[in-house]
Length: 73
Image 1 (cartoon, helix red, strand yellow):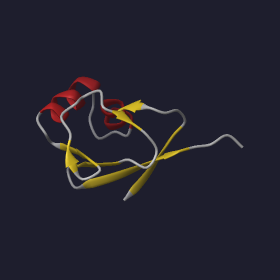
Image 2 (tube, one colour; image 1 turned 90 degrees about the vertical axis):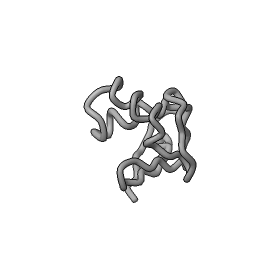
Image 3 (cartoon, one colour; image 1 turned 60 degrees about the horizontal axis):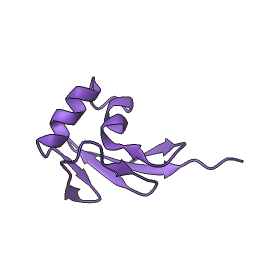
Image 4 (cartoon, one colour; image 1 turned 180 degrees about the horizontal axis):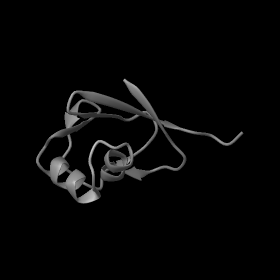
């Protein structure tokens, strides 16, 4: 499982897929989410703009990403 640090909450699901390089565009990410190819916390997620927060786990094509909120020091 790979940890992905986010600096703000919430973050839209499709943006995480795009910025982590799992899809080439936001549009592609939205299509794949809409097709039911992405899980959030173990359940299929079809809401493209699902609001993600630290601790959430995204599953996509055999890869798992856990979100972690980076706190200011």
